[in-house]
Image (tube, rainbow, N blue to C red; front, side, top):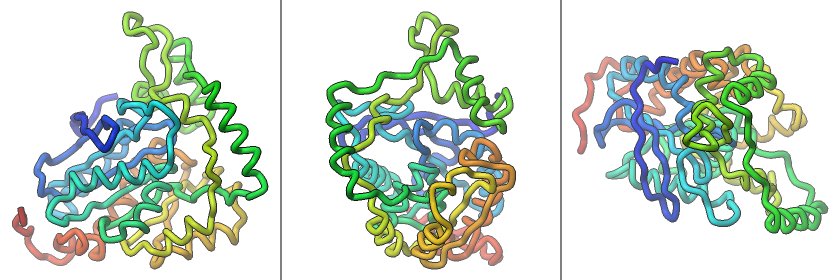
Length: 327
């Protein structure tokens, strides 16, 4: 698949993790920043599909040259792996470290998260509400509330898996991975599925590039952590969010089946001024399935005066000429 927007990749030490950063657009340190956070078993490179649609339109609509950065979370993509288990709070600390590097002179960024990435930044936005100019949660519902009575069983399972961790998934070749992806997601055509498979996998043997492949994700991510998810705690973070927030979901997502209608409504109402939208003919992986529609929704959201003002940029419809860089 031919990429429309050139991408570069670099590596940054974030705390105790060597983190891969995928970059598009401006290299100017003073450029407005859009951060894209991937979901479980995904990585930053696969945002290319949506970036191709969004970046040119965003530059024109805001009269700015944007910088887009998509990190690989620790243990995913080309970032380093932990020596032991993964703790969810580490992701918030990694994001905090990344924003400290990217957002200098008290600048803010617009952050978009998908699935796991949305859950991370949703909590982060409540812990550091001053850091974000805008927040878009793609399929970021949070997890179903945990039953406290399951805590002993969950701890036992975690202890067992520590002794015998899961192993990497392998596929006969990249085509086999593509076939597996399309089996579970009918919306991915051959070209798109092959591109994503290339982002997600690497050869088991570098000397056999057309041979077996495995996912570029630490298999220990499949271990269920010993800490229960508590809905009330998540809602307390969401209630502390001050940035304009978009809740975007696939119109045909199957993830809503895990929540009762009143539960989803209560989660949404916890975020003040929440804006809601859906993407037609899309499921959970909406940024892969309908990248143009996701880009359109994000463009509309980011172009709002409320977001641009928090970025210290002129409103896209104000007629105000482009500001000089404050740096």
